[in-house]
Image 1 (cartoon, one colour):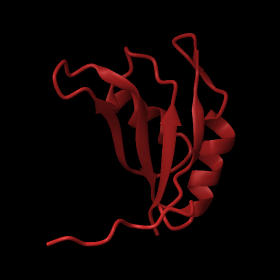
Image 2 (spheres, helix red, strand yellow; image 1 turned 180 degrees about the vertical axis):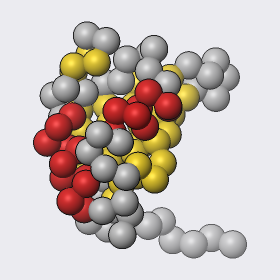
Image 3 (cartoon, helix red, strand yellow; image 1 turned 90 degrees about the vertical axis):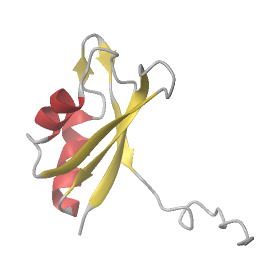
Image 4 (cartoon, one colour; image 1 turned 45 degrees about the vertical axis):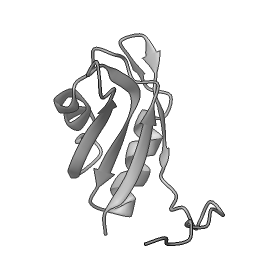
Length: 94
C-alpha cells in the first residue's frame, strides 16, 4: 500500500532527485514530486513523497521531520485524505 507524505519548508535548491535520494534512506520511494509555480517554474517550497509501505513512511517521518537541509528545517507528515480531514467533496455538476 502506497503512503503519501507531505514535505514542507524545502530549500529552493533541492531537486526531485535530491528529495528522492534523501527519502530512499528510509525505504522504497515510489515518487517524489516538488510542486512548482506554473509560470516561473520555481519551487513552491513543498513536495509530496510516496513511500511503498506504512513502516517506511513512519521511518521517514521519524528521520526527516525536523531534519536540516541547506539550513532549512523540514516538516514531514502523513497526507490525510479529504474525508479524513472532514472535508466533503463538492457536489458533482455536469
